[in-house]
Length: 106
Image 1 (tube, rainbow, N blue to C red):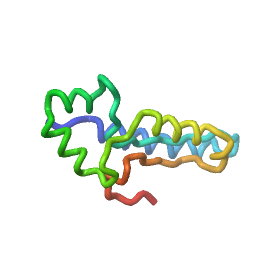
Image 2: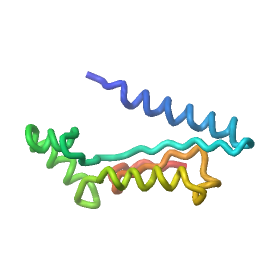
Image 3: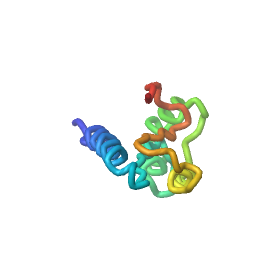
């Protein structure tokens, strides 16, 4: 069964790019964060580790960093994007996945 996640994420990225272009002159920034496998206690990957260890291990082994990400690593990217340090960053999709995906964003 297909999931609507991919279509919704693509729509969000596209929408954000439009907002960024439309409101950039007013100093409004719009960016998207695309997290990879993020381990949170009682989250999806913790549940998979307990109940579907083969799936958990499969995704763990796929990541070049050899681990899953942490929530604070996503939060730090969000804080950066919201900060003055990212004042010229808008319309971006920041992939935070430890190198898991092989696509190139340009």
